[in-house]
Length: 282
Image 1 (cartoon, one colour):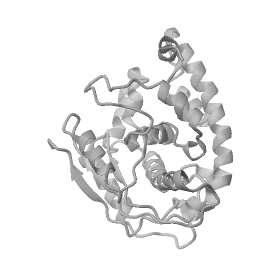
Image 2 (cartoon, one colour):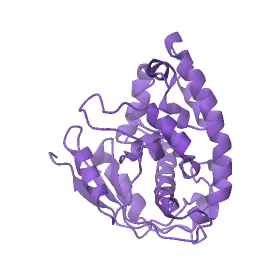
Image 3 (tube, one colour):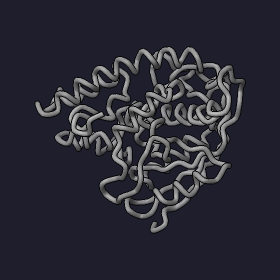
């Protein structure tokens, strides 16, 4: 595909579903400059397609996701340019860990059903290296979960890059100190939901469905926000006692009407204690 066309049309926001994309536009009062209308049009088309594929994927993998048992994840915390990417990639070489790949973080709703053609198309939209540090990028490199959470919840400072005029609105999600309880609950539920899906993709590389209940491997994960403030919420999420004894929801827990009993997220992290690795320069 022509690189000029990709730069004019492609945006990772197409990884949202149609409802979240419409809500994102409303939050920003449809403030899209004319030069970015092609990207907005493509994101609209892609979000509708994502919604259709997600419905099929939910039906296909709901039971597998609901049966997942999650091991304590390992979080890589550190400031920008402190070596967190390098440490994250080193940890990903350890077979004891799973990790979200770039194409999974950019298509969090549908990556379990992604075929090679879709991954190749997404890879064609990526630059071979990152512009700020020349680190190599492709569809299969370890990725930050923050990309996925931005698309799943709209509660991420990453979205201020797309809508810089409303930077303060998204800046509150760096630490969640000023975030609403609803935003925080949606972010927590989406994190657990994403944690449960990533290991399934690894199993699919070796075996195709049907899959039985399985446990995840520990995940090496990299955080991309105000780490000290967010880590407080991570500890509460991963160590807090469960308030519901029923089976976790089998569908997206961060969708209000689709949550399970008591709004509990998929998977059980009530006994998981997170581990933390610092960036090389942190």
